[in-house]
Image (cartoon, rainbow, N blue to C red; front, side, top):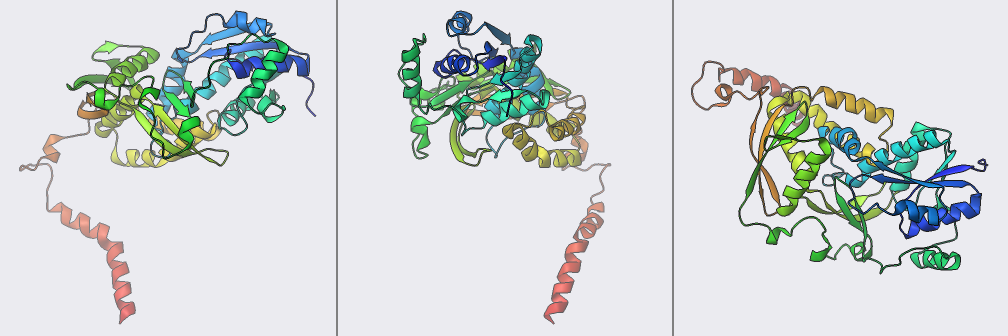
Length: 404
């Protein structure tokens, strides 16, 4: 049985769930509770959280600005891998969890805490992501997941709990869906979206303009890359977080980055999710475009074969696992020549690549031309084709003999 914790770091948002959890931890464990809030670009007002946390029993509230680290050390490595889960999901929620857990565990170290707690439910992916990351950093950490152990089962139970204990919360009408936002994307799940036949309501989307209402004139942008990472937009050098934010703003104007999917959760069930990832969508397409002229064919083929595995590792919470680190090293080695510029045309939900150039280009117009050239002898193709057909011909000859 786990030792009784003396100091707990709680992943805290100030909302109903974590306000209840903070008080419950104090009652259940008679331990000091430190509230921890990560700013990953969710855009919520974080002012007043310290007072709210202390009023609910926290000894202090630590707010960490993780936006640049999130973009530079988590989003960009993932984009270098062109990671997409199940063909459509750009992993915006998944990739935010390891940076939050890493910062949370740093607070554990600094404060000498012996336990952490979170508000993730027992049905979702986030419990796995938080806890795998925490245990990879400190294998001795005690983890308290109230939704898996307490008697509360619903939002109404939580509201009654607050009333009984006079916990200061603002009770608002329940949204018809669950929403989560960060610098990279915003997600919507649950509620009316649980019926997979229901089309998302137009007023649900917080970032992107409905493509039908987007400007009737396309907008062109140029993204600059160095060694696989985006560094500029229209010639202006930007920090990783500022660059993603700029592309979020531009992409949102044109309705870019909406996805509606049914995905397979790690715990085993299917879940419907609707996502807005305007900047990430632009960057994923731009990155592939600059790779197309700078990366060797076989290197690209092998890397692309690893995308589902890499994406699955991120989705399932194995960011700090050796296999993800191994894949990252291979992928990053393939990015050393991925430098150049990509021009995109944004129009009514689309982000189309219309130009790419690089000082490291492997594209040679003399080889690609249909005009006469002195570099490529078309007669060489005869032997090339016959050699590649050899195994196919041998199999066909065997089958013909078998039919005799």
